Image 1 (cartoon, one colour):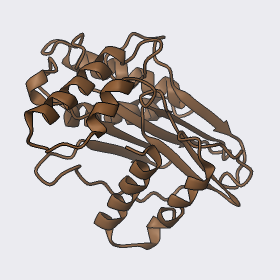
Image 2 (cartoon, rainbow, N blue to C red; image 1 turned 135 degrees about the horizontal axis):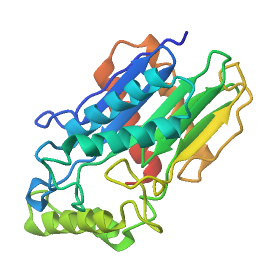
Image 3 (cartoon, one colour; image 1 turned 30 degrees about the horizontal axis):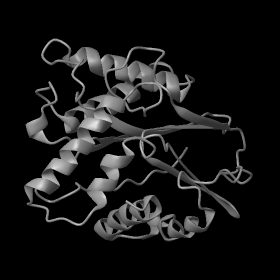
Length: 254
């Protein structure tokens, strides 16, 4: 039996929390809904918070029905069921249809750990002397010029700044869930989704997990994660989640 502890906070106090998670005795799944500027439209009456909650609910349901199924199969089923859940009220073919990044872990009764990541979320595991940090870098490898423009100095309320961010969102939409672009949980036909996954049959909490260079390709930055691996011993949830977000941003350089 695994012990799970979870902490989540919205990206800003004036916005709804677009994170969602589901915890079962041998499953942990976390989804981060992708924020989208309302004025660009997304063809949906629900939004990313609903999408993330619904998705993890269907992942949990699929796991209960098929406890030995591969995480990737559970996620594909959940994506399809979530799409069906709002296909009658929303334009699920809209390029901005709600989406989410996902990280998932399952552990069998034999101690076999299986995990996946989809989108720019990060999976971190304490692998004894090593630290396993894995994420999907395909989003960071798209929309280079638009991303560079957003990094340029600007005032948040400046129309030019808004225009840069809108251009980045539109460029990302055009690259989502297609070859040469990046992949996220959203409306996507079966067989087209590309998930990063791994199986580790070591029963000693990844004691012999391979050292994998994280998505930013700089192993020395792994030290940024060490302070947050002992989160179960801390009570300051807000500082903890902020620290993890800061570590992620520092590694991305964005």
